[in-house]
Image (tube, rainbow, N blue to C red; front, side):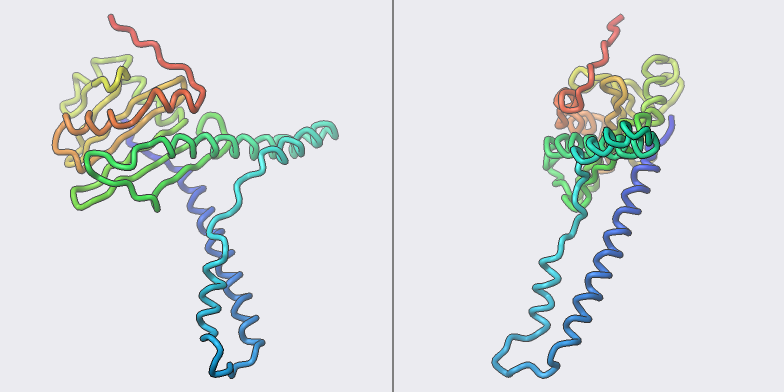
Amino acid sequence: MAPLCLGSPVHSQVLKKAGIKKAKSFLKNVIGEEEDSSDDTPDANDDDPSDEATKSKKSLNTELTPEDITNHMDEAAKAFAEKDYSETRFNLQQAMAGVELELGRKVLESMPEEVLGVPFNPDEDQVVSTGMGFIGLTINRDYQSDKGEISAAIANNSTLLMPYNMALSNPQMTTQEENMKIVKVNGHRGVLELDEDEYKLGIPFGQSSVFILTCDACADEGEVISAAEAFDIDGYLKILGESPIELDEN
């Protein structure tokens, strides 16, 4: 089985964070220059200038604004009318990425805030989209405590989906592996693996998505299944607009 690898989307998120960091650094330098141009000897009754600088820094945005989907659609239509197909494609991709991010945020908001008594870490929430159909949307939420860590990811990614579909359609693959088995969670079939001290559960759903749960806070298979049952996969299907997989009970 191929390991969970959110390569390209996560790499894009890293670049995004790097861009935000550079923007913050630039604004910080601008604020610093403005402070240097003022009188260096404040009145004794005035507030500490450093307090004002702190207030200014706190007022800065900490995130980039989301994609303007409507504007990108308008620009795509305009470019298409002008037969500028490269610009048309660019704006359609940006619009698609914006739509996927909105869908991803809705899924993330519907995820539980606690699993097996382990709370989620809001700083680690992540929604990434490339705007590309075969490796598009990735949603991730991490749960962390002294007990351990649980990570839940939903990926619209054919590369990640393929090995799970292969295992489910060929049960002999799992019977030949000592630490791999097929399980069912809330009516959805998945593949459960044990890799040293960490469990991993992959559940394909819809036509192109997969739910992946990794857990080192789970003591046994039962806790893994209980953790997975806390996630509303049917609800994610509706949000993403996907059709459920028809299971063959034979």
